[in-house]
Length: 67
Image (cartoon, rainbow, N blue to C red):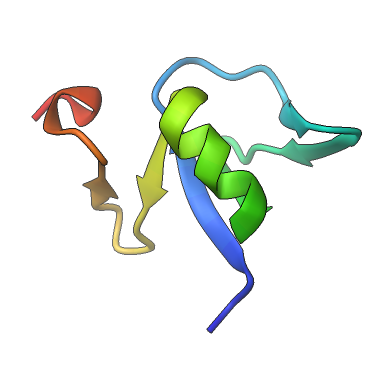
């Protein structure tokens, strides 16, 4: 199991998300790979959802993903 989690921003992104003193760059689709300990606060407070590599967006709450 990978220690990195793929997250997708639910808002327009510029370049990277910061957590503490580290920055994690987004790709052109707004997907960012972050360590698991960084993923938790981003999922709960930062406007991110889990990104499935099959292009399916899984959200903690359905209204976040617009379902």
